[in-house]
Image 1 (cartoon, rainbow, N blue to C red):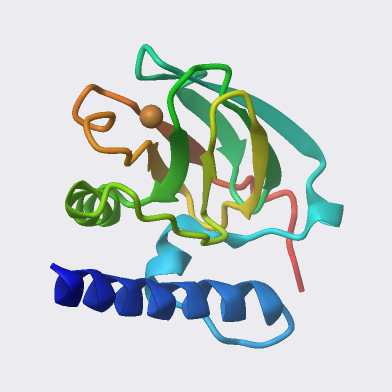
Image 2: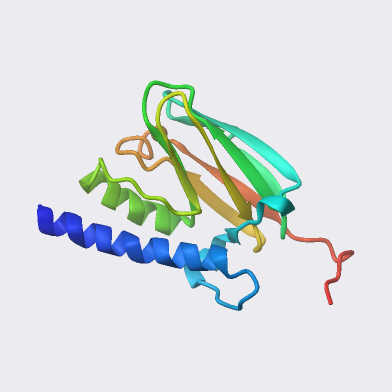
Length: 167
Ligand SMILES: [Cu+2]
């Protein structure tokens, strides 16, 4: 079991390294493919809008559907008023499912990526994220059992209007 655990942590460390370099190099051209599909860590100063999301022990996010505009940076303020640990991770459905399988094998595992936040009961956290690509970005709680119970939601990224042209 130890071998599995350490292998998983190594994989996560790689993921964290990708996330860290993506958030730390806005001036650079480094784009992680998987991250690009859902957007990238946002700059807090550019977050003009805050969206509050509650995570409940009824295994629901409220709201579970959020509309944003393409290119918009949003501050997601996430609250866990329940008695269980919950988390919110942004990702493609495929990524979320893969992470969930890892979480089920390692329930005590914590990760610390810019696209997710894990919250102990009664705590609050935030994710500042820029949604760069039109389409759908899924999110889910990957605590064992929670995703299966329907603890998931989606951000609908609406295509940017042609009025704003960036040169
Ligand atoms: Cu949960």
